[in-house]
Image (tube, rainbow, N blue to C red; front, side, top):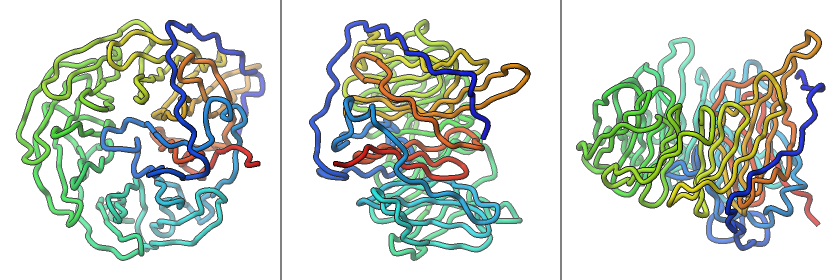
Length: 408
């Protein structure tokens, strides 16, 4: 990996406009409490990126974050597809000579072996619904796309063919699995893989996944046409123009992020609650939790907005004054901290350099608490960042990174 050796992380100057208190009560120990699992990209059916239980990981201890273990893709041609965390175990999907779902102890990284090993398959996005693991796969060399379900004992329970069209992945929402492909939104039954309903869209969502808020499924097409459907029947509920096609949902609100800004809408009927078009340049991804919406942009910016009113809480930079300071991944938040994976590209003295790092910012003030460089040689964007208990996990293409704090 080429490191941006000419770039020295500068101290970020946060604009602390009416910072709020975001510290959550510490829950001792890894995975302690009711449920510190992370069952899909974004964590929940709204892809909010929020984790309520972070154990001893908070705004104080995050300053000491380090890589605690990693699981490289070591088989010939292997690439990591995704990861989830369930009951203290990390499940990692990958494709190579075969499609694998492999297990690791979430705290120590001990390799617990493959749960699933399917010849001729390349496994991608991974999620869990109940006690079932759901993974998207591509069959080689036919390039047939499927969605597959396995028990946590490794038994395959169903397979369904998927359309060969651009997709932003799937979202598990209650007893449904929601997936857009081309200009069609389809809801599959999690128990059987059968199609519950499908709906035609006004355009294509591209690489943006659907979300669910209450009894409605929401998806947006580029550049920003938001459509809502009844989660039970697929009947259209409402439609409106919005600021972008990247969505997160929490409570009774859905937030849209895109070139036209960051905006909040009532999930029930699409009424606009607030909109900010000036704080960030080209906002790309968001995370919502503890009363705030955290947004990264494609030019080194990270900001927090009051989730209810849209008032700016703070605006800081993760940039290193490089030619490119960008984030291609959804942030996560919990324990009074927001985390984002960011990328820097610079040319110094005719030499191009690259740097990928995890940044941690105080959720109340925006102060950068930690910058930790990650050993990332390849990327495609949208690899999942996971916050489960007192660890973070980043499922990069060539290895799964586990980040935590040193235990006493």
